[in-house]
Amino acid sequence: MSPTVRSEDPENLRSSHPSCRFLDYFLVISLVLLTMAMGSLLTLYVAWERPQFESNIKEQIQNDQKGRSAQLVVDNEMLTNGTLEWSETGVTNHFVDQYFKHDKKELVIKRSGFYFISSQITLSCVDTSHCQEKGLVSLSILKKYEEHPILTVNVHIEAVTVKPKPSSISGSIRYLASGDRIEAKLQTSHEIADWHFDKAHTVLGLIWISDTSSIEYHSQ
View 1 (cartoon, rainbow, N blue to C red):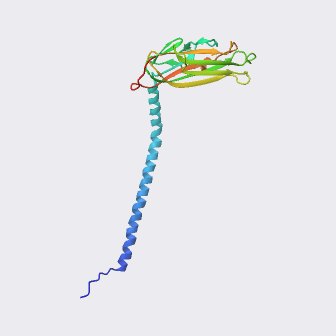
View 2 (spheres, rainbow, N blue to C red):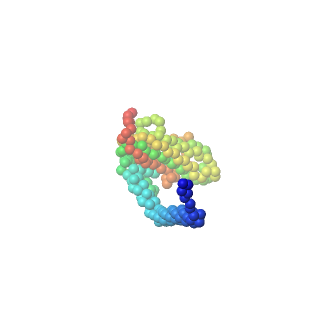
View 3 (cartoon, rainbow, N blue to C red):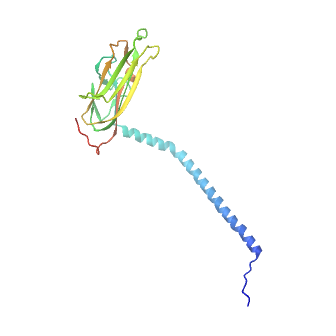
């Protein structure tokens, strides 16, 4: 007896393959279109919500900074060697928040932590016909009773025609303990009468950055 031979209709084979391929193509195209549609919807959503999101973030940052900053303006315009006095009034955007206490020549720290400390000094010529002499103005920000400054701001005075308003700014991150007193000392290369501080742009600023409960600190 001869073995049974299974035969298939070639026409049926040819007709089944195109149908399968069509279904595959249909599924692939459907997935691509669905992905593009989802991407478009996501883009529209982000574009719609982003302004509100950015506004909420900005407001949160501003709220977090409340109570943690101090910015003072120099009180005396004269370039007199010694410890400077600072003021909270007279110029806009100058303030002392709850982490600090202002006492004329000192800014007292009320909460321990890491602070960003910065200072800018800007000079104005009193009489442009006389402000031709060169000189150096140096401002040191330091903790009271300590010799080494936290930061130093130097301004080199040149001829007024070259640099009408000499200015310089400096900043540093330091640990400050509760009770530390921050002060600023001015030193000039010689007596300078024709140049004064530009009060609007001669400032001392501190911003509390982070807590330090996990950091050991030994006061000197």
